[in-house]
Length: 216
Image (cartoon, rainbow, N blue to C red; front, side, top):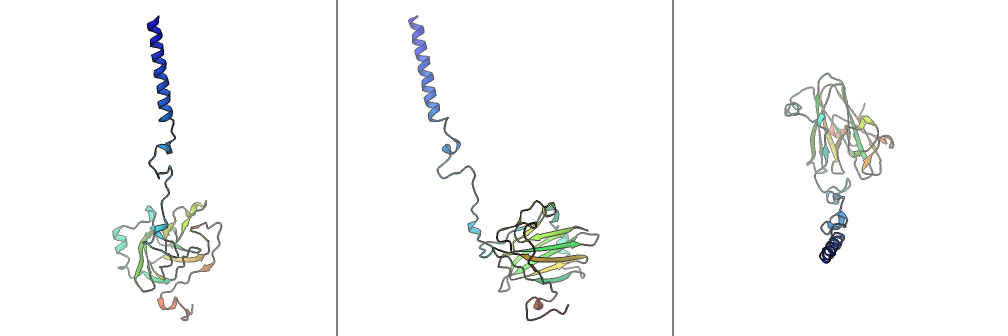
């Protein structure tokens, strides 16, 4: 009987020690066990990239997979004599955004190139995208956040203020339009913000800026 009593006391002591150890270790929250300075939901530090008004890094360009051109189509841009070249001036401050529309009226996929240049004439953006036949592709300088399904595959070309003027090649059958909006932020909702300023396109870069005035 005495031996059983000793065994019971030993078992109780073991259980007590186990509970104390669990309290000190296993009951900690996940964040308590992380290294000092770690967080459960790390947030990317975007301050180093600057802003649209004061960019410090290379421009953001995101083209959905279905609009990515292959090497052959990209190379054919300059080889096609039917390709038209137009110039325009995007505006992309922290409070504004440039939107472009490309509509392909032909029966074949067309590759459009977009280049922008700094005030000193050096190139800032150089990209291209495919426009499928009979489709409308939307391009935005700001990220688009909207419930509108037609904007889900928008192309992001972050012009920023470094893009003093832009050059765009349009194969035969591709029509272009665009405008500037004052959206007062880094995202654009086409259902909430109305177009403010139509873009002027010209085949002659000297007529993009006044005092040269287009006759038509």
